Amino acid sequence: MSILLNEVKEMHQQVIEWRRHFHKHAELSFQEFETSDFIEAQLHSFGNVEVSRPTKTGVIGKIYGKEAGPTIALRADIDALPMTEINDLPYKSVNDGAMHSCGHDGHTAILLGIAKMFSSKTELLKGTLVCIFQHAEELPPGGASEMVNSGVMEGVDEIYGLHLSSNYPTGKFGVVNGPLTSATDSFDVRVIGKGGHSSLPEQCVDPIVMAAQIVLGLQNIAARRISAYETAVLSVCQISGGDAYNIIPGEVLLRGSVRTFSKELRNKMPEMITEISNGIAMSMGGRCEVTYTRGYDSVINDVALTDDARAAIADYFGEDAVLEIKPVMPGEDFSAFTEAANCPGTFIEIGTRNPEKGTDRPHHNPSYLMDEDGLYYGLGLFTSLIEKKML
Ligand code: NI
Image (cartoon, rainbow, N blue to C red; front, top):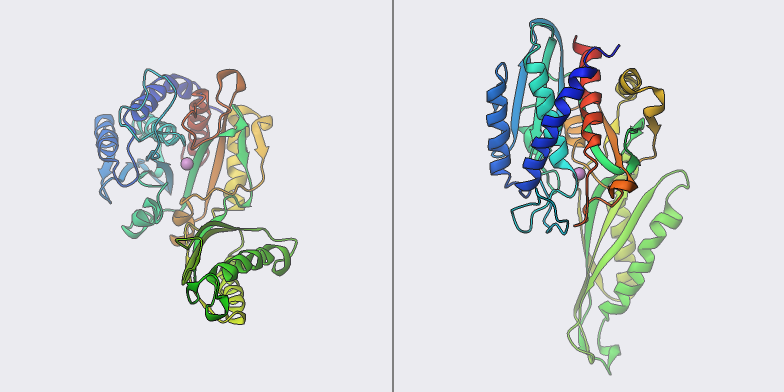
């Protein structure tokens, strides 16, 4: 069945135009004022959409079917990144220092396209379609948890999200059961010693030597404390301390990030970091203060819903379009809609990689380009899912 595939084709051009509008007017996380006003105005113009603003820059569009059925949420993130685009495009961002280099302009346009298509089909629709235009995915604590706290997930039975990705070829859909993205945490270790003259170390407690050993000690977490069947990345990315070549400083600050997939392992990380840092510092006469900050939860794809997505993709684009992928390390606050709101969901990667068009460049890069054919596949995925579940 692919009743609506022709409508998807017809909607593609409009979605490209919307995407270029959002691209040109890129706005940073928590500051998506024009973007959210534009979304709201479009949703109102479609008719049959109940529009609300649960947060300052987040927008919800609800479409009620004439018949009873499930409440299904679709989520798009709407924010851009703090960088200046180096591509010369007619729709290059007019806002200096803000660029849609992650593809959220595309996600937003796709979801508008879906809202437009189904706002004219309430007679056929069974259940309620909730279109979530979420602000601030890029900046922890993120907009998703704010939206969940404002109650947008009440009564939602299933949620779906997507991300355009230059990691996979255009026309392919990256799916995975279980963990898709890692949990993204950070930590600070304040290494506290006693400063003094470089020529008299015996009168000091040298935090630089302690910090050096702590950096190496922390590497043992991934190498020696975690099963080979589990995955964790711990990177110390910042060391600051000291002002002169002949003064032993009093303190050194280490900062780093931790990526994990399993909840159990994640919960153990703060203790292991504290234990190693304190142990090393104490053995040398100093001490540490460790601060562990939990970022986004891991996105965990529900197996049944992911199977539904596989079937939906196969219906519209054939089984070959389904690409079984490995989990990815970048974080994603879509997890708030599933974990915090305790709702089953799945998140699909939509390929946009086409070297001939130069769309194989990485995301979060000032030269990022999108293969807009990916918008068609994103629209197709959501449409096929709605067709399966709500028509
Ligand atoms: Ni993104």
